[in-house]
Image (tube, rainbow, N blue to C red; front, side, top):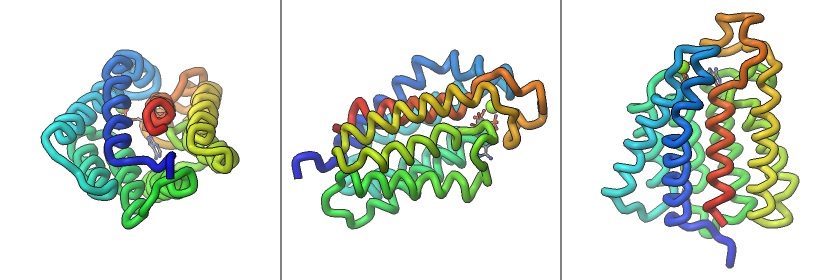
Length: 209
Ligand code: ADP
Ligand code: MG
């Protein structure tokens, strides 16, 4: 199939995400300084640098082998709440692709959903708790709705929906994670994790097709 996603494309995705987070580390940390402990940018940048190191020194013959290594690297290097959450996302994402012959929009949609199920299983976030899930949930829905139009359409719809979800976190009161300690004072600030998640999806739209 013309639009099957390859291991090389996944590697390009991860490197693009790492570069974006590196360039935006100051912004992510600034967002986290308003409602957290000012480390989201540095946490993610550190973890993704380690991922790029792994990608540059290893070859991977399947997506599940690739994402297992990526997930484990993130769990052990990012720290904070987001390390285990991003790590779990990639571990489950990769497991869902195990043995899949040709990865098109349907298969990718299933893998995204499996990854996000992992985030929810770990973090117990619900919609409008002001977390990364507020970017993920609309993204999954938009992806599935556009999946029949092909991978490019699905990824672009998912990235746009994530950005809307990210923007909508500003007005929410945090009910999970460090920001929840602030109560009402968390209102009026964009969630850092929803911001990095949107970058992940924008990178996917830029590299996977
Ligand atoms: P920490 O809060 O431990 O310092 P980070 O600053 O790296 O970790 O990440 C903060 C982000 O993690 C938040 O902006 C939010 O999106 C996400 N987050 C925190 N707790 C949860 C949770 N229970 N479920 C989903 N996402 C969460
Ligand atoms: Mg933090």
